[in-house]
Length: 352
Ligand code: NAD
Image (tube, rainbow, N blue to C red):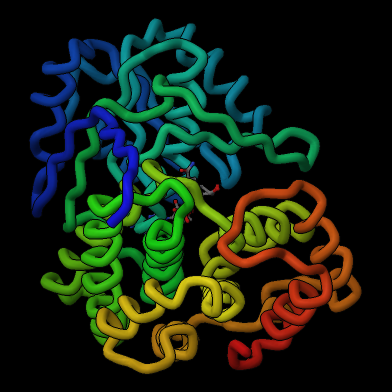
Protein backbone atom coordinates (compact mmCIF):
# COMPACT_ATOMS: atom_id res chain seq x y z
CA UNK A 1 0.00 0.00 0.00
CA UNK A 2 2.93 2.34 0.70
CA UNK A 3 2.73 5.57 2.66
CA UNK A 4 0.34 8.35 1.77
CA UNK A 5 -1.30 11.61 2.82
CA UNK A 6 -5.05 11.96 3.04
CA UNK A 7 -6.81 15.30 3.54
CA UNK A 8 -10.56 15.41 4.05
CA UNK A 9 -12.28 18.56 2.84
CA UNK A 10 -15.06 19.97 5.03
CA UNK A 11 -18.47 20.01 3.45
CA UNK A 12 -21.96 18.81 4.14
CA UNK A 13 -23.76 16.66 1.59
CA UNK A 14 -27.49 16.05 1.46
CA UNK A 15 -28.41 13.35 -1.01
CA UNK A 16 -31.68 11.82 -2.13
CA UNK A 17 -34.96 12.45 -3.86
CA UNK A 18 -36.87 15.63 -3.05
CA UNK A 19 -33.95 16.94 -0.99
CA UNK A 20 -34.39 20.42 -2.47
CA UNK A 21 -37.20 20.70 0.06
CA UNK A 22 -34.50 20.98 2.76
CA UNK A 23 -33.01 24.12 1.21
CA UNK A 24 -34.59 26.68 3.56
CA UNK A 25 -33.47 24.72 6.62
CA UNK A 26 -29.93 24.47 5.22
CA UNK A 27 -29.84 28.21 4.53
CA UNK A 28 -30.90 28.82 8.11
CA UNK A 29 -28.18 26.45 9.39
CA UNK A 30 -25.60 28.56 7.57
CA UNK A 31 -27.13 31.82 8.83
CA UNK A 32 -28.15 32.89 5.31
CA UNK A 33 -31.04 35.37 5.46
CA UNK A 34 -30.58 37.16 2.11
CA UNK A 35 -29.47 34.67 -0.52
CA UNK A 36 -28.35 35.56 -4.01
CA UNK A 37 -29.37 32.78 -6.38
CA UNK A 38 -27.31 31.87 -9.46
CA UNK A 39 -28.34 29.94 -12.57
CA UNK A 40 -27.74 29.97 -16.32
CA UNK A 41 -30.34 31.65 -18.58
CA UNK A 42 -31.54 28.14 -19.58
CA UNK A 43 -32.25 27.23 -15.95
CA UNK A 44 -34.10 30.37 -14.90
CA UNK A 45 -37.09 28.19 -13.94
CA UNK A 46 -34.88 26.28 -11.47
CA UNK A 47 -33.71 29.63 -10.07
CA UNK A 48 -37.34 30.69 -9.64
CA UNK A 49 -38.10 27.42 -7.82
CA UNK A 50 -35.22 28.07 -5.44
CA UNK A 51 -36.44 31.63 -4.86
CA UNK A 52 -39.91 30.29 -4.10
CA UNK A 53 -38.53 27.82 -1.56
CA UNK A 54 -36.50 30.52 0.19
CA UNK A 55 -39.38 33.01 0.23
CA UNK A 56 -38.31 36.15 2.11
CA UNK A 57 -34.82 34.62 2.37
CA UNK A 58 -34.23 35.17 -1.36
CA UNK A 59 -32.61 38.54 -2.02
CA UNK A 60 -32.23 38.19 -5.79
CA UNK A 61 -31.81 35.89 -8.80
CA UNK A 62 -28.95 36.36 -11.29
CA UNK A 63 -29.33 34.14 -14.36
CA UNK A 64 -26.19 35.11 -16.27
CA UNK A 65 -23.92 32.17 -15.34
CA UNK A 66 -21.87 30.95 -18.32
CA UNK A 67 -19.38 28.21 -19.21
CA UNK A 68 -15.79 28.72 -17.96
CA UNK A 69 -16.75 31.48 -15.48
CA UNK A 70 -15.96 34.60 -17.55
CA UNK A 71 -14.62 37.45 -15.38
CA UNK A 72 -17.05 39.84 -17.09
CA UNK A 73 -20.03 37.85 -15.73
CA UNK A 74 -18.49 37.61 -12.26
CA UNK A 75 -18.10 41.41 -12.18
CA UNK A 76 -21.78 41.86 -13.09
CA UNK A 77 -22.87 39.31 -10.50
CA UNK A 78 -20.72 40.94 -7.82
CA UNK A 79 -22.49 44.26 -8.44
CA UNK A 80 -25.85 42.52 -7.90
CA UNK A 81 -24.59 40.79 -4.73
CA UNK A 82 -23.60 44.18 -3.33
CA UNK A 83 -26.78 45.92 -4.48
CA UNK A 84 -29.06 43.39 -2.76
CA UNK A 85 -26.73 43.04 0.25
CA UNK A 86 -26.65 39.27 -0.06
CA UNK A 87 -25.27 37.31 2.89
CA UNK A 88 -25.10 33.93 1.18
CA UNK A 89 -25.06 32.16 -2.19
CA UNK A 90 -27.29 29.45 -3.63
CA UNK A 91 -26.14 28.14 -7.04
CA UNK A 92 -28.34 25.75 -8.99
CA UNK A 93 -27.22 24.04 -12.20
CA UNK A 94 -24.12 22.50 -13.69
CA UNK A 95 -20.50 23.56 -13.42
CA UNK A 96 -21.30 26.97 -14.91
CA UNK A 97 -23.74 28.08 -12.18
CA UNK A 98 -21.66 26.51 -9.45
CA UNK A 99 -18.48 28.12 -10.87
CA UNK A 100 -20.10 31.56 -10.58
CA UNK A 101 -21.06 30.83 -6.96
CA UNK A 102 -17.46 29.88 -6.23
CA UNK A 103 -16.12 33.00 -7.97
CA UNK A 104 -18.31 35.20 -5.77
CA UNK A 105 -17.52 33.21 -2.61
CA UNK A 106 -13.76 33.57 -3.06
CA UNK A 107 -14.17 37.34 -3.46
CA UNK A 108 -16.64 37.91 -0.62
CA UNK A 109 -16.25 35.01 1.81
CA UNK A 110 -20.02 34.41 1.64
CA UNK A 111 -21.26 30.88 2.49
CA UNK A 112 -22.49 28.76 -0.42
CA UNK A 113 -25.10 26.12 -1.02
CA UNK A 114 -24.54 24.29 -4.32
CA UNK A 115 -27.38 22.36 -5.99
CA UNK A 116 -25.88 20.40 -8.89
CA UNK A 117 -28.04 19.28 -11.82
CA UNK A 118 -25.27 17.68 -13.95
CA UNK A 119 -22.53 15.17 -13.17
CA UNK A 120 -19.55 17.55 -13.62
CA UNK A 121 -18.52 17.45 -9.93
CA UNK A 122 -17.42 21.07 -9.46
CA UNK A 123 -19.44 21.35 -6.22
CA UNK A 124 -17.00 19.03 -4.41
CA UNK A 125 -13.81 20.94 -5.23
CA UNK A 126 -12.01 24.03 -3.98
CA UNK A 127 -10.82 24.68 -7.54
CA UNK A 128 -12.06 27.55 -9.71
CA UNK A 129 -11.24 28.10 -13.39
CA UNK A 130 -11.93 31.64 -14.63
CA UNK A 131 -11.57 33.11 -18.11
CA UNK A 132 -10.59 36.56 -19.30
CA UNK A 133 -9.73 37.44 -22.90
CA UNK A 134 -9.90 33.75 -23.85
CA UNK A 135 -7.34 32.74 -21.21
CA UNK A 136 -8.37 30.32 -18.47
CA UNK A 137 -6.69 30.67 -15.10
CA UNK A 138 -7.23 28.08 -12.38
CA UNK A 139 -6.86 28.72 -8.69
CA UNK A 140 -7.51 26.86 -5.48
CA UNK A 141 -8.65 28.25 -2.12
CA UNK A 142 -10.56 26.70 0.81
CA UNK A 143 -13.10 29.56 0.49
CA UNK A 144 -14.07 28.20 -2.96
CA UNK A 145 -15.50 24.93 -1.60
CA UNK A 146 -19.30 25.12 -1.04
CA UNK A 147 -20.31 24.65 2.61
CA UNK A 148 -23.35 22.56 1.69
CA UNK A 149 -24.20 20.52 -1.40
CA UNK A 150 -27.77 19.39 -1.99
CA UNK A 151 -27.97 16.52 -4.47
CA UNK A 152 -31.58 16.04 -5.49
CA UNK A 153 -32.01 13.17 -7.94
CA UNK A 154 -35.32 14.67 -9.11
CA UNK A 155 -33.45 17.67 -10.57
CA UNK A 156 -31.45 15.39 -12.87
CA UNK A 157 -34.41 13.51 -14.37
CA UNK A 158 -34.73 16.15 -17.10
CA UNK A 159 -31.02 16.39 -17.97
CA UNK A 160 -31.15 15.53 -21.69
CA UNK A 161 -29.92 12.02 -22.53
CA UNK A 162 -26.92 13.13 -24.62
CA UNK A 163 -25.79 15.60 -21.96
CA UNK A 164 -26.26 12.96 -19.26
CA UNK A 165 -23.94 10.58 -21.10
CA UNK A 166 -21.12 13.04 -21.68
CA UNK A 167 -21.46 14.65 -18.26
CA UNK A 168 -21.32 11.17 -16.69
CA UNK A 169 -18.19 10.24 -18.66
CA UNK A 170 -16.68 13.58 -17.61
CA UNK A 171 -17.21 12.35 -14.03
CA UNK A 172 -15.67 8.94 -14.81
CA UNK A 173 -12.57 10.80 -16.05
CA UNK A 174 -12.09 12.39 -12.58
CA UNK A 175 -12.24 8.97 -10.95
CA UNK A 176 -9.92 7.26 -13.44
CA UNK A 177 -7.23 9.91 -13.05
CA UNK A 178 -7.63 9.69 -9.27
CA UNK A 179 -6.72 5.99 -9.46
CA UNK A 180 -3.26 6.83 -10.80
CA UNK A 181 -2.78 10.25 -9.16
CA UNK A 182 0.71 10.93 -7.82
CA UNK A 183 -0.83 11.96 -4.49
CA UNK A 184 -3.44 9.19 -4.56
CA UNK A 185 -4.40 7.22 -1.47
CA UNK A 186 -6.47 4.13 -0.68
CA UNK A 187 -9.50 6.09 0.54
CA UNK A 188 -9.81 8.12 -2.66
CA UNK A 189 -9.16 4.98 -4.74
CA UNK A 190 -12.10 3.31 -3.00
CA UNK A 191 -14.32 6.24 -3.89
CA UNK A 192 -13.01 6.21 -7.46
CA UNK A 193 -13.67 2.50 -7.81
CA UNK A 194 -17.24 2.89 -6.56
CA UNK A 195 -17.81 5.98 -8.72
CA UNK A 196 -16.74 4.30 -11.96
CA UNK A 197 -18.80 1.25 -11.17
CA UNK A 198 -21.94 3.30 -10.39
CA UNK A 199 -21.62 5.55 -13.45
CA UNK A 200 -20.64 2.87 -15.97
CA UNK A 201 -23.66 0.84 -14.85
CA UNK A 202 -26.12 3.74 -14.85
CA UNK A 203 -25.25 5.67 -18.02
CA UNK A 204 -26.41 3.07 -20.59
CA UNK A 205 -29.68 2.72 -18.66
CA UNK A 206 -30.19 6.50 -18.76
CA UNK A 207 -29.42 6.49 -22.50
CA UNK A 208 -32.27 4.00 -22.93
CA UNK A 209 -34.70 5.71 -20.56
CA UNK A 210 -33.91 9.25 -19.45
CA UNK A 211 -36.33 9.07 -16.54
CA UNK A 212 -35.01 5.78 -15.06
CA UNK A 213 -35.05 6.93 -11.44
CA UNK A 214 -32.89 4.15 -10.03
CA UNK A 215 -30.23 4.74 -12.71
CA UNK A 216 -30.39 8.50 -12.11
CA UNK A 217 -29.80 7.90 -8.41
CA UNK A 218 -26.73 5.72 -9.11
CA UNK A 219 -25.36 8.24 -11.60
CA UNK A 220 -25.69 11.19 -9.22
CA UNK A 221 -24.13 9.13 -6.43
CA UNK A 222 -21.23 8.29 -8.77
CA UNK A 223 -20.92 11.95 -9.74
CA UNK A 224 -20.64 12.98 -6.08
CA UNK A 225 -17.86 10.46 -5.47
CA UNK A 226 -16.07 11.45 -8.68
CA UNK A 227 -16.24 15.10 -7.70
CA UNK A 228 -14.71 14.18 -4.34
CA UNK A 229 -11.85 12.46 -6.21
CA UNK A 230 -11.33 15.56 -8.37
CA UNK A 231 -11.25 17.77 -5.30
CA UNK A 232 -8.86 15.56 -3.37
CA UNK A 233 -5.98 14.46 -5.61
CA UNK A 234 -4.08 15.84 -8.59
CA UNK A 235 -5.21 15.13 -12.14
CA UNK A 236 -2.86 14.32 -15.05
CA UNK A 237 -2.72 14.00 -18.86
CA UNK A 238 -6.44 13.63 -19.51
CA UNK A 239 -7.48 16.79 -17.64
CA UNK A 240 -4.50 18.83 -18.85
CA UNK A 241 -5.18 17.85 -22.45
CA UNK A 242 -8.86 18.78 -22.15
CA UNK A 243 -7.87 22.09 -20.55
CA UNK A 244 -5.49 22.80 -23.45
CA UNK A 245 -7.85 21.75 -26.26
CA UNK A 246 -10.86 23.46 -24.65
CA UNK A 247 -8.92 26.70 -24.31
CA UNK A 248 -7.37 26.62 -27.82
CA UNK A 249 -10.49 25.71 -29.78
CA UNK A 250 -13.44 26.53 -27.48
CA UNK A 251 -14.68 22.92 -27.50
CA UNK A 252 -17.68 21.88 -25.35
CA UNK A 253 -16.50 20.72 -21.91
CA UNK A 254 -18.24 17.39 -21.26
CA UNK A 255 -18.14 16.21 -24.88
CA UNK A 256 -14.44 16.98 -25.09
CA UNK A 257 -13.76 14.91 -21.95
CA UNK A 258 -15.80 12.07 -23.43
CA UNK A 259 -13.84 12.07 -26.70
CA UNK A 260 -10.40 12.27 -25.04
CA UNK A 261 -10.78 9.85 -22.12
CA UNK A 262 -10.28 6.51 -23.97
CA UNK A 263 -7.19 7.88 -25.72
CA UNK A 264 -5.64 9.37 -22.58
CA UNK A 265 -6.19 6.10 -20.72
CA UNK A 266 -4.66 4.08 -23.58
CA UNK A 267 -1.64 6.42 -23.51
CA UNK A 268 -1.11 5.97 -19.78
CA UNK A 269 -1.99 2.26 -19.65
CA UNK A 270 1.57 0.88 -20.02
CA UNK A 271 2.69 2.98 -17.03
CA UNK A 272 -0.17 1.96 -14.68
CA UNK A 273 -0.73 -1.83 -14.97
CA UNK A 274 -2.28 -2.02 -11.49
CA UNK A 275 -4.90 0.59 -12.41
CA UNK A 276 -5.66 -1.21 -15.67
CA UNK A 277 -6.11 -4.46 -13.71
CA UNK A 278 -8.54 -2.68 -11.38
CA UNK A 279 -10.47 -1.15 -14.30
CA UNK A 280 -10.74 -4.57 -15.93
CA UNK A 281 -12.50 -5.76 -12.80
CA UNK A 282 -14.76 -2.71 -12.48
CA UNK A 283 -15.75 -2.59 -16.14
CA UNK A 284 -15.77 -6.36 -16.68
CA UNK A 285 -13.57 -6.19 -19.76
CA UNK A 286 -10.01 -6.95 -20.90
CA UNK A 287 -9.77 -3.59 -22.68
CA UNK A 288 -10.81 -0.69 -20.40
CA UNK A 289 -9.89 2.05 -22.92
CA UNK A 290 -11.88 0.34 -25.68
CA UNK A 291 -14.76 -0.16 -23.23
CA UNK A 292 -14.85 3.60 -22.49
CA UNK A 293 -14.87 4.29 -26.22
CA UNK A 294 -17.79 1.84 -26.58
CA UNK A 295 -19.56 3.50 -23.61
CA UNK A 296 -19.27 6.90 -25.33
CA UNK A 297 -20.87 5.44 -28.44
CA UNK A 298 -23.49 3.64 -26.37
CA UNK A 299 -24.65 6.93 -24.81
CA UNK A 300 -24.77 8.56 -28.23
CA UNK A 301 -21.77 10.87 -27.75
CA UNK A 302 -19.65 12.22 -30.56
CA UNK A 303 -16.24 10.58 -30.28
CA UNK A 304 -14.35 12.65 -32.90
CA UNK A 305 -12.87 16.04 -32.03
CA UNK A 306 -13.41 17.10 -35.65
CA UNK A 307 -17.16 16.79 -35.03
CA UNK A 308 -16.82 19.05 -31.98
CA UNK A 309 -15.24 21.78 -34.10
CA UNK A 310 -11.48 21.22 -33.80
CA UNK A 311 -9.55 22.01 -37.00
CA UNK A 312 -7.13 19.34 -38.29
CA UNK A 313 -4.32 21.92 -38.55
CA UNK A 314 -4.55 22.35 -34.77
CA UNK A 315 -3.37 18.83 -33.92
CA UNK A 316 0.39 19.42 -33.81
CA UNK A 317 0.05 22.85 -32.18
CA UNK A 318 -2.17 21.32 -29.48
CA UNK A 319 0.40 18.60 -28.75
CA UNK A 320 3.14 21.23 -28.45
CA UNK A 321 0.95 23.41 -26.23
CA UNK A 322 0.18 20.41 -24.02
CA UNK A 323 3.95 19.94 -23.56
CA UNK A 324 4.60 23.64 -22.89
CA UNK A 325 3.75 23.66 -19.18
CA UNK A 326 5.20 20.44 -17.81
CA UNK A 327 3.13 18.56 -15.23
CA UNK A 328 3.28 15.17 -13.60
CA UNK A 329 1.89 12.21 -15.54
CA UNK A 330 2.44 8.49 -14.92
CA UNK A 331 3.89 8.10 -18.43
CA UNK A 332 6.46 10.53 -19.80
CA UNK A 333 4.99 13.00 -22.26
CA UNK A 334 6.42 12.82 -25.78
CA UNK A 335 5.30 15.25 -28.44
CA UNK A 336 5.18 12.57 -31.16
CA UNK A 337 3.05 10.18 -29.13
CA UNK A 338 0.80 13.05 -27.98
CA UNK A 339 0.32 14.15 -31.59
CA UNK A 340 -0.77 10.61 -32.47
CA UNK A 341 -3.13 10.57 -29.49
CA UNK A 342 -4.77 13.86 -30.52
CA UNK A 343 -4.89 12.80 -34.20
CA UNK A 344 -6.71 9.59 -33.22
CA UNK A 345 -9.16 11.52 -31.05
CA UNK A 346 -9.63 14.08 -33.83
CA UNK A 347 -10.59 11.32 -36.26
CA UNK A 348 -12.72 9.48 -33.68
CA UNK A 349 -10.65 6.32 -34.14
CA UNK A 350 -10.50 3.48 -31.61
CA UNK A 351 -7.94 4.21 -28.85
CA UNK A 352 -4.54 2.81 -29.85
P1 NAD B 1 -23.02 23.63 -17.66
O1 NAD B 1 -23.16 23.98 -16.25
O2 NAD B 1 -22.50 24.70 -18.57
O3 NAD B 1 -24.42 23.12 -18.22
C1 NAD B 1 -24.63 22.99 -19.61
C2 NAD B 1 -26.05 23.47 -19.96
O4 NAD B 1 -26.98 22.52 -19.45
C3 NAD B 1 -26.41 24.80 -19.31
O5 NAD B 1 -27.19 25.56 -20.18
C4 NAD B 1 -27.23 24.36 -18.11
O6 NAD B 1 -28.10 25.35 -17.65
C5 NAD B 1 -27.95 23.15 -18.64
N1 NAD B 1 -28.37 22.18 -17.61
C6 NAD B 1 -27.69 21.83 -16.51
N2 NAD B 1 -28.38 20.92 -15.80
C7 NAD B 1 -29.54 20.70 -16.48
C8 NAD B 1 -30.65 19.84 -16.25
N3 NAD B 1 -30.72 19.01 -15.20
N4 NAD B 1 -31.65 19.87 -17.16
C9 NAD B 1 -31.59 20.65 -18.24
N5 NAD B 1 -30.54 21.48 -18.52
C10 NAD B 1 -29.53 21.50 -17.64
O7 NAD B 1 -22.11 22.33 -17.91
P2 NAD B 1 -21.28 21.36 -16.93
O8 NAD B 1 -20.69 20.34 -17.82
O9 NAD B 1 -22.07 20.94 -15.77
O10 NAD B 1 -20.15 22.30 -16.37
C11 NAD B 1 -19.08 22.72 -17.18
C12 NAD B 1 -18.35 23.87 -16.52
O11 NAD B 1 -17.99 23.50 -15.19
C13 NAD B 1 -17.07 24.24 -17.22
O12 NAD B 1 -16.92 25.64 -17.16
C14 NAD B 1 -16.01 23.53 -16.41
O13 NAD B 1 -14.75 24.13 -16.55
C15 NAD B 1 -16.59 23.65 -15.04
N6 NAD B 1 -16.12 22.59 -14.09
C16 NAD B 1 -15.36 23.00 -13.03
C17 NAD B 1 -14.91 22.08 -12.12
C18 NAD B 1 -14.10 22.54 -10.94
O14 NAD B 1 -13.81 21.75 -10.06
N7 NAD B 1 -13.73 23.79 -10.88
C19 NAD B 1 -15.24 20.72 -12.26
C20 NAD B 1 -16.02 20.34 -13.34
C21 NAD B 1 -16.47 21.29 -14.25
